[in-house]
Image (cartoon, rainbow, N blue to C red; front, side, top):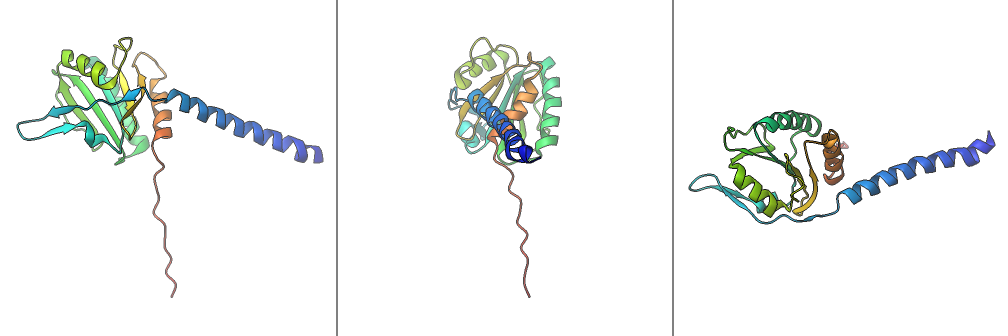
Length: 183
């Protein structure tokens, strides 16, 4: 019994903590910056628009896709919102082919209809996406506008990885402290 207390318990604790450190280092390596998000401006109408500076201070997830791929995005977004709730430090932007109606379906997601030719051009220039990621790329950008990771819908493990990486980049939610008043 003394042997287990002196050697077994510390060994098991070290193994557990070492596996957590290895996981942390692996995620950190996967999220090395790929480049800074290039500035962009999207004109909504004659008086209003949206630009890349509005994303500063927020972790952003950009989804690019066609009609068929949007259905997978919708389910992913519902799961994301269910797990993370409505966070002010997270922005989800979906770029879809022009034939799809652009609607705001929840407070943290913005849907933008764009011509597929312009979408490919914007993807390459603004987000530094390599040509090898042609089908439905997903781009993760941190709060300092650094492109951190690319994903594709072809990988069945994509959504699990996105959740892991968002959990790593997003700060923990601060809970309000309960103050007790003394009489």
